[in-house]
Image (tube, rainbow, N blue to C red):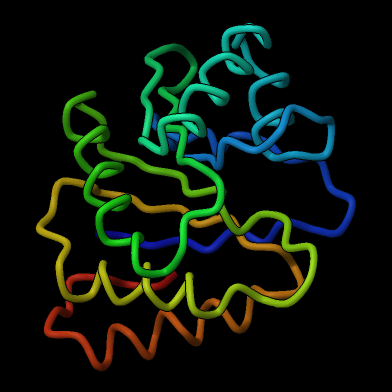
Length: 170
């Protein structure tokens, strides 16, 4: 699996990575600064449908999937703690597999308000190093500009300590 880190610049407009046929986003409140809003308003998604789906995902604390073009959309409930990340990632990868897609974009670290979510990012990196069983060809991780170097280092450390050498950072 090829892993790409994409830096999201300060004040930049957030866009879909063209190679990704499925995008995973946090089901945050509907406002113009949220990655989910920017991502879907710059494509063909209907805002009312996305807003309803995000509310439902958060109400039931379940991962949701919306098929569509130019990409499928996986919604992850907000407020997921580190202990829930393996289960959430299994659901995300299952959505990717069921959609027949091979290229996933993770947007959950696009805009970080306060301190870097090191524990959450480390849990994701560790899961991909130890528990991931395949199916995704390209994983693109969007990371806030303030956190990009830290994120790359966390990923490298997880890969070195994990049982797998399948992942490559470009």
